[in-house]
Image (cartoon, rainbow, N blue to C red; front, top):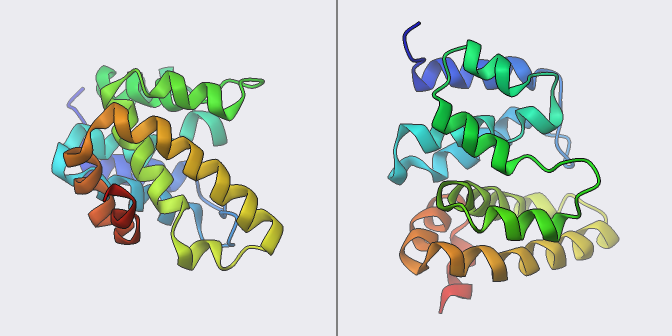
Length: 167
């Protein structure tokens, strides 16, 4: 089976997340596409991982389904690393992700998109404050694991307002 193109993986992600919405009510696929866009400087494999980063956690697709669809095993491994097991606290998952360079890059893009002021403004004040603290704490673990140049490359695409935190 030939390796799927980025467009093929985008279609797979769109089908998997069909009908899902994020916390702001936007179609969920817009989130994974934003994460994938942040991976553009790092190549097609990481863009694929960005598109698929939530499919194992939030859809009925399995890692075996992705492999059968021709998704490269390295991409599937990254997606698996990004998938939080039920019962694993978020901060523990973030520390585990920080040990894998490919996964940490995708998670930085995920965090950056989730931290967009325009998105958080649509949440109620309690959720906005809780999530802002959660994502800020995650950045303190994720960013040092990636390095300033990689963080800058990602957040300049996904959420340039975060560049102020690099100073």
